[in-house]
Amino acid sequence: MIEIKRAKVSDSEVVALLGRITYSESHGHFIENKQDLFDYNSMAFSIERTSKDLADTNNLYFILYYNSFPAGYAKIVLNAKNENVDSNNCCRLERIYILNEFLSLKLGQKTLDVMLKKAKELNFDTIWLTTYIKNYRAIKFYQKNEFLHVGNYSFRVGGTDYDNFVFSKSL
Image 1 (cartoon, one colour):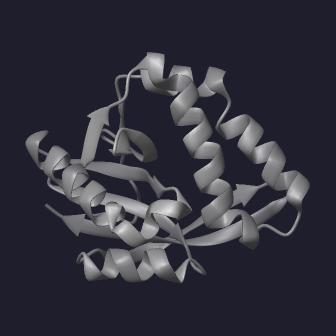
Image 2 (cartoon, rainbow, N blue to C red):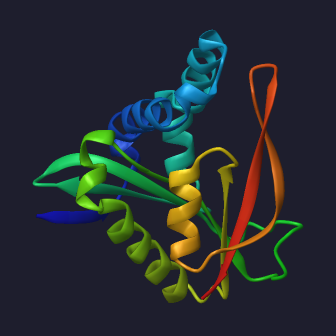
């Protein structure tokens, strides 16, 4: 059974751990310097930072459960503008990560569907995201879901910049 629940500050440890593992699984092989990966994970997915992010009312976190087991999570940032997105009423799908073990179950699609529905319920007209240019699986997934490539974005991990695509979708 699949269940997607809004995360609370009390879920900080679960979200931080999911973030650290799923980021390493999905992007770790792209990052050449493994110390940079470790340092990034330690900063971006610390329990303290995750708690602050969960407490921020501009962030909506959701945990995806499969048979009551936390299998992934998603994050929407409300009212997040991007210079490449032609909308003043948009939000950002900042994260949608599923543990590798559960990818074959198509849980990403179910999670995306819930995130799009949530963005519509909140009366946003556009949702946007970024994805690494070599993350072909994610690119194909978002294109299949009618996201359009609207620009580029540079994401720094350690001392290295990684080129990302900006994708946008009208709601």
